[in-house]
Length: 306
Image (cartoon, rainbow, N blue to C red; front, side, top):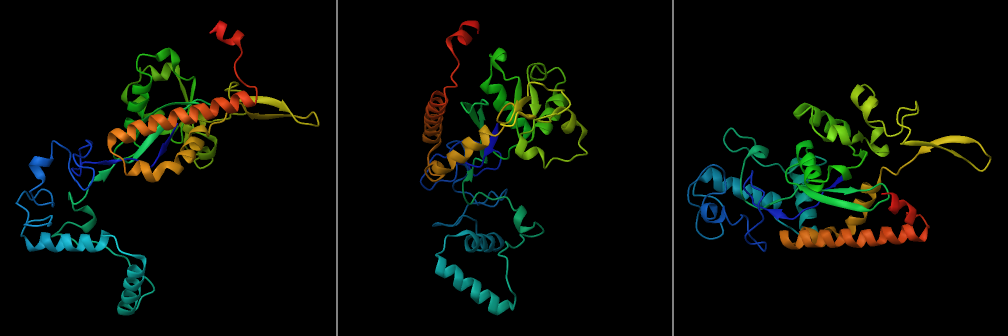
């Protein structure tokens, strides 16, 4: 399981996760559009915005902050940006500069809450079997937080506890395990699944994290998890331990998704969901072909015993 920073646009209101009413140039969902489209974009001002294309009211502080925001984030051509950088360097006499938003009253510029533009889904969480076959996916709206990840897991395996994986590899499996135990020590996920950090990210986890080292090691060499480590012999007949499963299938799938980022980011929520499901089907077909080509498909005897 892994998160891929990718998503469609959603309502500009901070706590809203609804899709836009107008994906062409809109900022709000259908519920917030009639309430906020004619109000100042600085929250929680609530005053009517100025006529025309202005996004703020007639408060000079708000209109000035809007201008600063537009100057900071509006699209400019590459030659124009080079000219701006050159002029700023000459004026400031510095090697570089940072375009920062000014404070609004006592509020730092980076902390000002506004609805000047639509927000975006933070990432999609994808889940695959160890062979690479995709299982499901979900959206994380604000961050890849453990509560949202657990919610996606619950939705994918809703009513199918018997089909849950014995092991789940995730780059932040230790924090996910902490969250599950903290929220509900009797959660059924603790009985059905063990949580391990994928091999690539495990090397960067703190060696002082006892929970991570004890419960989330992807390849313990002390025999604690014989299903994760197997003994193989090389060409010289020497025995050595190796990982039994590929814990990076989600990372590999997300790398494959990178080729479709551009169209996905500009889709409506409905088209985004449909296209993601279609990509899952295409990738599943590709995985099935690889398995057949390597003659690693499960035989009829296996399925008879399932």
